[in-house]
Amino acid sequence: MRNEAPQIVKKVIRNTTMRAAVIGGGSWGLALANLLASNGLQILVWEHDPSFLAALQKNSSNPLLLPDLVLPPSVSFTGNLADVADFSASIIVLATPTQFIRSTLKNSPAELWNGDTLTAIVNVAKGIEQGSLLTPSGILKELLPPPMHSRVCALSGPSHAEEVARQVPTAVVVAGEDDALLQELQKTFSNSFFRVYSSRDVMGVEIGGAVKNVISIAAGIVAGLGFGDNTMGALLTRGQVEIQRLGLALGAQAETFLGLSGIGDLITTAISTHSRNRYVGFEIGKGRKLADIKAEMNMVAEGVATTRSVHGLAQTLKVEMPITAQVYAALYEDKDPRQAILELMTRDLKAE
Image (tube, rainbow, N blue to C red):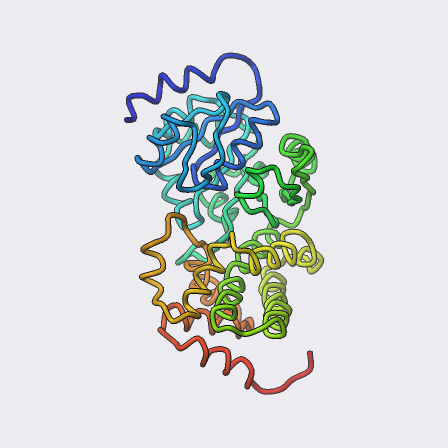
């Protein structure tokens, strides 16, 4: 199948139109590929799963992920990262789950990440790496040469792939170190249905995107247990406190957590039927086991691995995160989710 890739790449390199490479052909990667193609860019998508790649190469679509999306001819596909390096993209959209960022970089040609044409690496994964406890930008800066660090950006916010693919009005934030680069990325990604704000608080944007997945699993548990709006309102409010506590301990700005990548993304993920993390929590609340839930899912729920990372990070930094601790116990210690909620409700009373 990889022997077909060079022929496919030739199809897209035909003029000086700006090019973007999307590393990861999951639902979010495909939705962003479609978005950027609609904005006039030439796109090459790299997908590691042979069956997904075959479907994309044959039909420009993956019906298991986004059944109603057929990508335009300006989007091509490959399973070979060397082809992506040869593509000479101006922007790399890194759309692999956080836990696979390190291996993806290590298994790719060095020139892919430091080519002369590359102006931005835009990570769109939302998580914290197990073991290192690094955010995606931390992983990238650990592996990439220092001159590339200012080109590392994070795009986050309330943005389900299913809705972006249908051109539902969406607003997100892109964060980075270079104001001029952020302005260019805003122009590149924005259109009539996708609005991009900018931020210099990369850590805040990444922590908001990562930890909201943990709280969204908790929201799913609450729903699965059959509790009501009172419980959900309390959970999301106190969950937001936990997200901000951790972010501030890592040097983030408090106001970031009141924005799109903070409260905006938390609300959307916690209440939406599109949310994979909420689904995992819902099934846990119904009494199912994590291994059985994961075995039937076509896509990765980043919050499952991130729960372990956030729990470890909270312990390392001595940040109080009781909701996260109970989600960790429900996922990894087989704790009765109803007991977990009871323990949250009967903690020592304190001022808000």
